[in-house]
Length: 320
Image (cartoon, rainbow, N blue to C red; front, side, top):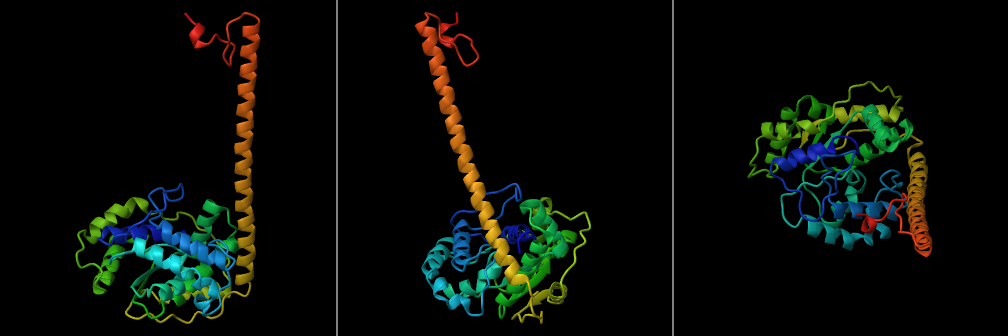
């Protein structure tokens, strides 16, 4: 899930000796100044996949069981294989993209993805507060996203070697968290040539950890309460993960996220249109300014005076 410590977690695994792969890495942003550590090419496929079903990361589409075999998904298989081959041409690798909580069934089918997975979750109130700061999302929408992403993640990793951990664990004991991850990946044969100790990796990511200093009271639905309990029950490593019983999703989950996705898309489109309008306005203002300066220069020359600059000063060529 977004805003759940996935960037720090993936960087820690990378520091232990697991490469991110080839291709382009998503550039840093104000929200993640130390890096997102996400593949641009693979994220593009994930975005196209969600869009093919009428959604986005902010408004996940309703995906019914077996959706990965749908024609809309099959049409993207070639692009997915090409991107995967470019980014992860050799093992081992670490791949981080919160969207994969939603799209992992597709990737398991498209590239026979069966590697070990690290699932990290964060308290829903902290995720809601973080999404509010970064994206301006309401509490209800943020909690719905938290529920959808974490529900899908638990179902998607069924049968895989999985380590379920929490952002609380990572922030309270970074060295212990990295050591646990290192042991898990070592047991899976991923860290045969690890060059950095868990303590050193933890020291490297220490600056990236943000402990939430406030209490954010939120009201969870019964389904969200059960999901949070299930995530806690699933903590630890699993040789072959079997999802815990989490019951039915909140009844309004799908419709709320679909509607929010539409509103989010409209907002993005309006911001883009506003940006183009501002650019065009700036161009018009600059052209008008050039014409005014040209006219002033013409008038001065016509009157036998020296040309003047924007502020009425003689031009540099006319100064002694």
